Image (tube, rainbow, N blue to C red; front, side, top):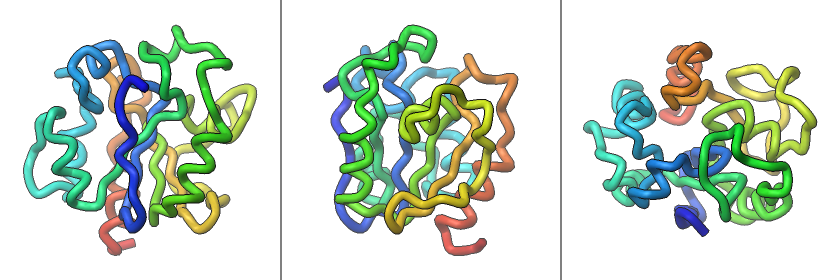
Length: 167
């Protein structure tokens, strides 16, 4: 396992990526690249009371924010990952076991792999109609600098409003 799951019952939200990036794997922290927008957008949308450094991700856990990836044994950019790197069934078991109130995929590829789809072309950003068990699902644009052309913070704001109970 590259990064440990940060999961427990009663979480407000679990953020799920495809797999840790190279920098996250090297630093041992979720969303650790300096160019990644994850921690800044969490603060701007009110999900954290201050800007956290990636190494402080356990503090976010104390705020009801959990973390996982669909591929737990590999790291790297999405283009380096193979279908066999993803364990869809293990991922779904985790969500059904821990029952977070909200699950946010941090990019279409993680949602694609979790749903077992061949492509992401039919996945739309925002709140999804289908839940996983009782968990509400959002698909958000990737905060990675490599995905800058798809960045739209409005979807993150929508999810944060729902998580905070304002939507």
